[in-house]
Image (cartoon, rainbow over all chains, first blue to last red):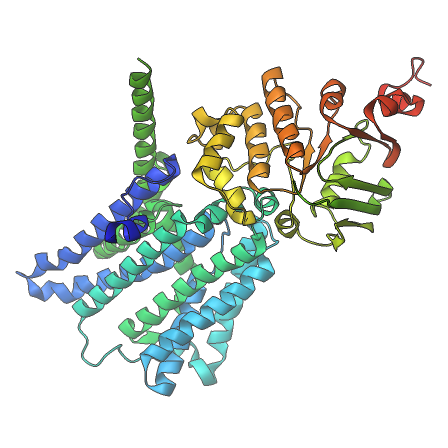
Length: 346
Length: 241
């Protein structure tokens, strides 16, 4: 009874369709699960040297913050094909909304709620307005939106204290960096699992259909404009909630969070990890954030080494690290299918 | 047997700049019948179809399905009301498998289906051996069959097929004809745009002939194809006059 009722939620059950996409999705979520477990036990390795733990836990929190924004951007740009240049703008909006509401009402729960609602609503509206724009025009329009929002936040000093930034209280009094680490890790796990279920549902097919061929998708009955706006809203609200959480960790909301170089960082994370994969943004965020941190000791080479790494990955694994792995899964499965068919015919 | 429905185009007109591509076309199609829309290249057939399915704005006139006005509706709403179509250049989703393409068409339209329906359709279209392949791995002909399958999964009242036989081998043409006849027998209305006179005559009960944006003949295939202006528009004259 239990099995029958919950079997459809099991990612490892034989899928109704054994397409390459379905097999890759199973491998993808399995990889995510493995990485999340590894990240959960990683701090235990520091127990013998607890002095380094808060520092690395803090880097981990930053990586997870980027991972949540990157997962959202990947759903929007990777799966649905809406190449926005404003993911970190929504993180910035989420950070300010959460800070303002928390400071006014004294509860971060309402701050989070307000951040999710505000970024989701703005994302939905922007998605509707921009839904008819082609790729390049959409990217430019979101870039303009990002700059306008950053200017507004910088200039409305009475509300935001401009470049000085707005102080944000911690999520709870006395909360440690390790607790933040696990809180952010749980949020990443929630977002990853949520995006998996979204992608394997019919709506995941809608996203892919819209990206590939919006005319075809509309002809088959997919409300293209609505689902584009929904994808935009999901990406924006994930960025918003990530920003809302992160601002309480760092303690200061500044317009720098929405700067273009921050968005570039998200794009690089997704490209390196693997666009249109669930695990890609997660491993991309971890690899890029930790590499950047390790290279901080070599400021003269720091950006050059990072750039070289990106060039090499783009040259030899254009679909990113996870894309490379999943492509090999697809090839292997195809060979197995061919062999099975051959055996069956003899 | 489905209830009687009428798809009606009234005075439909389309301009492209200064050129009038479709000129005040008025037509009615019953469900449970196969109509061929024919005419030389540039006659306005595809433009008319595009206006009927919401892919092109109607400049003048209207289209309605059993009294429900479709003019101005976006394609997905028209598809959900039961009017579906295929294209001259197929619009299948290349990175989805054949089965996923079919599932998507049914899900997005809200049409009920089960795995038996889907599997029997795959067999009927001769796509069962490639059901889990991605669409980009199919031949052009197979992609055309897949697009027809997507139309069927949408449980249509009317199906508009734009050049469904173009570039297909005789075996595939036979499959498509069989499917069209089944749709006809099940009470769906089928409108086929085609230049393949022999095939059209074998499946259509009616031919609408267009030339230069206008309907120049409408009736039973034998009568329409015998009309002098149809012969002239379609074949031209011997001396080119």
